[in-house]
Image (tube, rainbow over all chains, first blue to last red; front, top):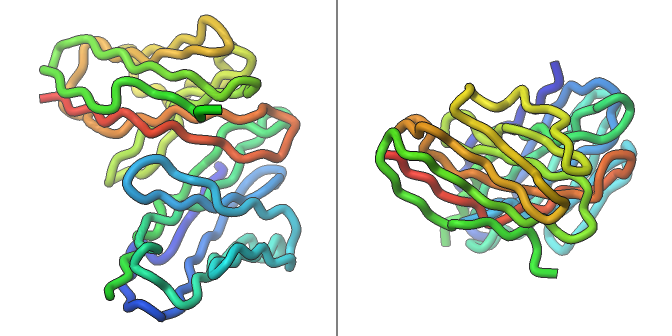
Length: 114
Length: 115
């Protein structure tokens, strides 16, 4: 059964700290791994990772994938209160070789205190 | 493009009533997904359409839930009769479709409260 497990479930840090969020997965026929950020409403897309060892970066956020060990990490450096959100990891389910729906982990709730 | 549009944004209803949630996907997207989000279970897929055809409805909880996609620009999720345990945020999402590595884009969600 395809699944995504995120850790920790919740994290409280102070502004300026660096955080690392973890995502491990099991999937038949891996295609990609996606990270989303969910603040008050809809999840918004952050990164899509398809290859091991290649870091994706956007400002203070970066992510990397290890397809051998079946995990990904999302790093946030110099955290700000605006980074407070739920961070979701997802993998597309396989439908006969094509990409289907996304299977989500339960998310990591990050709270950044001033 | 306005993105994925869902309505209503919030709904409060009494148990036993019929609830209909609506979704307009992004134009040109061939895949549409309905998800339900709760604190306990996170984001769970309810049903997935591709080219208006339901591909996977294994996540639909029971016969009280039904979903339709009569055309490429509209989908509904209906709950009849509604129960308090249906209270959740329901998200609709769309993507370009199978065969492409692409992210899904989410609507703003409908927060349903059944009292």
